[in-house]
Each structure stands twice: as structure tokens, then as C-alpha cells.
Length: 375
Image 1 (cartoon, helix red, strand yellow):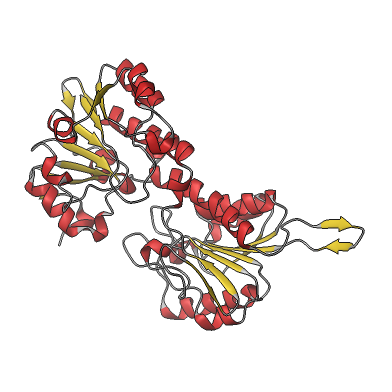
Image 2: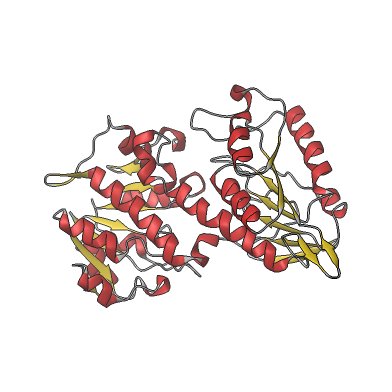
């Protein structure tokens, strides 16, 4: 296949979809790779690195797209900026696409006869784990969230025994024990905090405790709390009320809070109300990792850090882009593994019976294909 690596156009996006190491891997498998000039600069990979790995450097985006069988990106292509129009009709696209909230984009891609694969739709099955970009980026976000909290917290994280007395360790409360939450737990523990973690899914209790944190949860069955893909289900109103009441009690003792709770295809649940923030200790910190989908804290503002009722609330978006070297390294391996899975003897091979292909593909042959996105 002829694979094109696009330079990202989204504001503050520093990652690149393939790095030189993965380019080298794909070239060794017989694929041709072209990289838009400057595509890796934000992640500290220069054009010479890509050339040495076997890629061609293309200064023109239009020429890059028109010569490609598959275009790979991190962020979804823009309609207004002309990226979608530049894609060659009948070509393929691999990228994060935010398909549940990007109806206009899916329609535009369909009109261009583009076969689009959404990296956030990789199915949660064993053989697709090496392609799971959401897990990769959540690892970065969970780690960075705790570092942001540590920087903003006006206290030490670890316990100190000093001549001036004993300094008690900070208390961290992590909401959601998915990949981002587990990484936040591990990072907070490494920094010396006492950690509690809340999740509605009883199956994650062992994972939380294995990292040295105390598990806080509702008394729910696995069927009530988790869907077939392993994601948290939306709760009933009664369950949600109990959840919020339990969280409120633990927030009062917390110095830092990291919220990670999201429901695929739906707005993030509000777990921290203004009243709950008002009851927190002055100087405490909330980092809301769900702010892109509405936020778990009612006072979080996307892209901003605000102080409300003495509590610092960090709503930084796209945290993975703040660590572009390793984020790009992880994402590029996910993308390369998907490309190798899709590659046939004479180009892109679309096997609609394959769970990875059909589960990740959102547009094909002029239509929206994924059942979750139709209607």
C-alpha cells in the first residue's frame, strides 16, 4: 500500500501518526510511505529521521493525499480546512474521528467514497489489543493528570519526617479505574500519596488494590455496572444518586481528585457538583480528564484552569499531546498494527467478516457502515 502520514492541523496537536521506527517496519513489509514535510516536528522527529527510515518527504499536502491509498492521522481531518476535499476518492483514512459526535464529517467522508477507520472504535478483543489506541492515550493522560495535580497542589505528596515535625502525605481520590484511572493511581502512589479509587465495576477492585489503593464502590453486579466491551454502563437515576453521595463523602478528605469516568458515545456523567466542590478542602485540586465529553465536574471548563470555592479545577484537553514523543510512539504502533492487519497482497483488504475490520470501519463505498452510527 501507499501510506501517507499527514501533518496535523488541529490547534496544539503535537503528535504524529507514524514515527520513523514504525515507518521502517512498514517499509520492510513492502509498503511505500510518504510523510508530509514537518509532520513529526511537534514530536521531535525531523524529516531526515523519516528519510533514513525509508519514507519519501512530500512538501505538498494535496500531492501527498492524491498519491495515497491510505492516509494516517491523529486528529480527524477538517472539512472547513479542505482536508476532506483533498482526500483521493476511493482512498482510506485511519485516524481518531470522534464518530459519535461527527455526523457531518462521516457524511463528507462518505461523499468522497473514503473508507474510514476510527481508532477509538477498535474492538476490545484479545487480538486487537496491539491496536488499542484509546488504551495507549489513556495511559499517557492518567500519568500526566497526576503530575498536573502535583504541580498545582500547595502541599507535598509524600510523607516527610523533618526536624519541624511530620508532614502527612497527600490524599488522592481517583474516579474511574479504567486505564487512565489505574495509571493515575500508580503515579500518585509512586509520588507518595495515600490513594483511594472509585468505580462502579466490582471487577476492577482487585486491580485497584494491587496498585496499593483502597477501593471504593457501589454494591452492583457485573451486569449492572459493565457492558460486553468492559466499559462502565450508564447507571439508573437511583444508582447515580447513591454514587454521588458516596463520592461526596470521600471528596471532603481528598487533596487531589482525578476524574476519568466516561461512557462511549454519551456525555460524561456529572460526579462532582458545585455543592461538592464547595465542601472540599481549600487548596485541593481536581483534574477532570472527561472534560472533552462534558466533564465529570460541573465546574470544569474545557481548556482552562479555574479556581472555584478555593479548589483548583484543571480542565486541560488533549493531555496526550503534552507528551508527544511517547504518545506518538504508542499511537504509531497501534496504527501500524492496524495497517498490517488490513493489508492484503494487492493493497487494502476489506474483510467484512473480520471483527477488527468491521468494528473499526465507519464509512465505506459511499455510506456509513458501523451499526452504532446509523440512524
